Image (cartoon, rainbow, N blue to C red; front, side, top):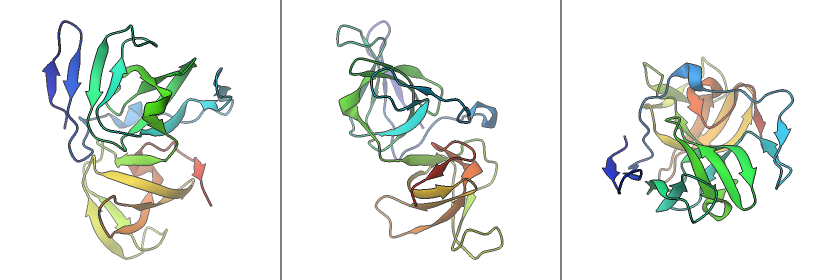
Amino acid sequence: MGIPLRLGRTSRLLALAFGLFAPLMASEASAIPDTAAKGRETGLPVPRFVSLKTGNARMRIGPSLDYGTKWIYVKSGLPLEITAEYDNWRQVRDGDGISGWMHRALLSSRRTAVIGPWLKQPASLHKAARENAAVSAELMARVLVHIKSCDGSWCTIDLPHQDLSGFLEQTSLWGVYPGESIGD
């Protein structure tokens, strides 16, 4: 849940507490294209997901410190999608569809996700990667999770600051592309 605060004419402050996002429609979740482009600076696929390395991170209107601040994110670990690269700057999109530029030093390759805001029911955290496996927890929309691995259908996750891990269906996460494999 974001709390916008005006910072001048075009700037806003987004205080993201507990890794919560405003609603995102399921149709907005995008898939990795079969022919993903390579970033002009890193050679890595674009688009791709990363996470916010630190709190108090500024999203800017353009790729330079000369551009104004669009948002300030205060919750580290939030998933962001890189959609373009320019020098040391990355154009990113958050789970609300807000797009802007962030310096690469603010981003981490550590994969995180949030439980899909489009879900009408809590997501079941299973003890095994099967729909009929025992459920260890029910996770509400927008809860932040750390991704250990994904096989294209299921993701192994843990919750930051919790002694809780398990398996979630990949389609219930924003921060992972449908069918994407990660890790193992």
